[in-house]
Length: 129
Image (cartoon, rainbow, N blue to C red; front, side):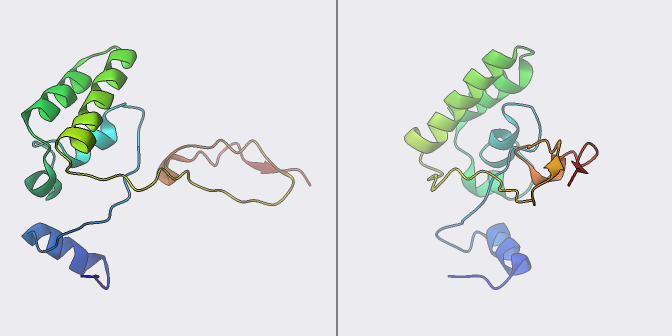
């Protein structure tokens, strides 16, 4: 069932009314487990945890990723968690990995790309043409 706008989608998600939910997940900060802990972790806020929690092994991997100060270990634990959600528990089926696209005219300099539109730094952008 298609929803006409975000409010209807959110209400149906809240009530578990749907067979398939299409989401775009963005990595909004530098924490390797940020996106993974927001959707499939049983202790995540919102309605996602209620319907899409990937189970105790997933939670264990995410909690290890969140607890370690070692970035490499956090990435490893987050990858383990995503493997569990996708390949073992099948609570999510990735359709595509899409990069944010930025288009600008020739002469724009010093634009720093970032994986989240919310965190693009516009301060150093300048136009030299």
